[in-house]
Image (cartoon, rainbow over all chains, first blue to last red; front, side):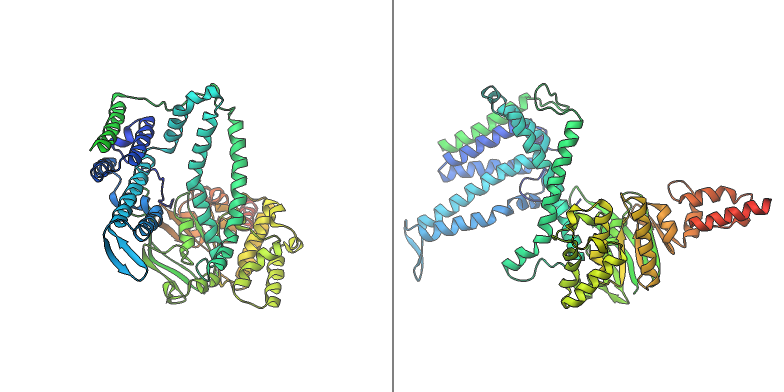
Length: 263
Length: 275
């Protein structure tokens, strides 16, 4: 009930992006991701930034919640900027402070990289926020199915992803329950240094791990008792449909990237 | 000890599409020396209410008063020691290599000396009929044994109020009877017990007062006979009340028995009166 909103959470509202075919969204995310690494001009990056901002608006995910999706990478972004700013000695010196020097080139490159990472994470967050986990897994399976001929276990991979995604909120809830149960027995997870705190987590981690194994067992039994035998000949309740608008979305993603490279 | 909820409202995940109002304006007191039964259907807010009694969940609005003091002004650990809370399926939180050590976790956290810790472990395991399990691994026990041990793990803090959330769910009848016996023993010993349960029959057996929740609101509070005879429908009253309630039309002298033994003697009285 109190699922944490972290990177990769489905946000169930109605929007044009939610309605797109999962495969189109996965491919478009891939195109944008590759494009982000090919684009190396400021105007190009700003073009993609504009596109991503418009997409976030179109997804109807409230901006505040969307920013929350980006929180987990805040530290990485900050480190990247600092690293570039202090260790690159390109261009005019802007600041000098002891052995630390800030150069124009470093500052520029740091901010450029930060924006690139944020955009990359934003596109991934857009994908998971607007695509139900089951559709996402079905989309991945479909996209990988040509590899089945090479004995690539596309179905199994998709099933693993589905199950993993499905159980993130469940385990999260379970962890919360156990944490509260131990708190009711006087456990305190906030006092002491890192080692003490890690030790304090033991009464939560042990039962959580045991519970996860038990769940896995039960799930396997439930799947078998419903006749699950793997992907062979298995049909789907919800079929994915690739429509004209999905093709348009892909074309638009490609255009933005090409535009970004050319300008 | 007396714990009181004043106009407590609780909203889960406020401001998101998952927002749920679990408690709406609940006012209720746990009196010293009573077993208070909290009943209601799935999703009626029973468990949410239970977690407010020691502020593991904080009210969105309203207050929790412990012996006349706003619970928010008390230290969290202090409050949790005084109001012992046993969650639903508490055995999910067993973690130590032996039963003994698991039960000792809470008293050790209180900073008691080892002798006192051991004494409490022995006594609580004894009370729950699990003394013989002390050296075993909690993971190798049966469901009923695990439940006993998990409850002992909270009782070892010697709480002044014990809150049990569905303590008998999924248990065998023998363990269930034993646990109800523990509830009675605690009450005799002066520790009030809050029994949250969807099993009306067991609440009927041990409760001095009953609070009926519905969609996060208090639908009725009072003695078991008041609450259950006011709502003798199948989903709201224990079996005993459902048997007796229709008889009362022609035979008001049968009274309003709720407990099994009471009901039996009332029905016997009725039959003898006829003979």
